[in-house]
Amino acid sequence: MASQAGTSVVDPEARGILLSLLAMGADESALERLDENRRCICGRAWQALLDEDEIARAQRLAAWRAEAVSTLPRGLDRLHPSWILAALEGEPAPIVEIELADLPQPLRATVLGLLGIAVAGAPPIQKVEKCPAAITREVVRVAFGWLAPLCESDCGPLAEGLCALAFDDLVTEATRRGARTVGQSLAGAAPVLRARAMAAAGEPWAQVIAAGSAESRSDAERRIAMAHANANIPNSARTPGERLLHIGLAVLKFELTTEHPGSLHRVAGRLPASLGRAMVGW
Image (cartoon, rainbow, N blue to C red):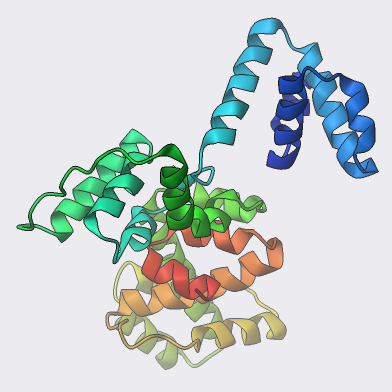
């Protein structure tokens, strides 16, 4: 367990350094040329590798090598598929084929299905001659590299919990938070105002608004809730549920930005691209 803990947290740069040293047949003394912080990180990881048995060490190094040769951001398959479609948008068919070929098979199948729906009736993508590996890597890097913050950023526990939800469940949770925030903003307000908000929202959100209005909140917390409840909502949000969703996303943006610099990007990557882009300002 100690060895696993020592190597699982090694960042990509440190993994690259260790792989390079091993490929050159260098020993641990080569780490002395690194700065103190990097030397400590690599030194602990080096020792952890030595502490593992031969099979575990070989498996770990194989995984590191596979990651090193991949041009795809780590965790790309955890993003909402609409982000992949956004990356492919406007690309000519031969380039799309190159980009799709490098995706993990399950993700590629999902994206192909979505593309098939989007371009129903269009002629199939024509096969192109195999590109040199260097060109393929650069095409894929340019296509998907900008998505890296959405799937590789460190994050806090709130973001981790939200990212563990299925795509549709995450949207539902954001909508629920929007309804709760509307209720919190109405705490202490005249009953007729709460009744109007509940009637406008409809079920199941009316009950969430009622529960939120019954929560005990300080004046400062209620002011924050009121600010979120009055957030700018795009004209495209026409149904009560859509409006509550955008209020909930404003709440999440505030909470995630406060929690950790990378939390907002990670959760945005689990949302449909049309919603996630607005959250991160892309």
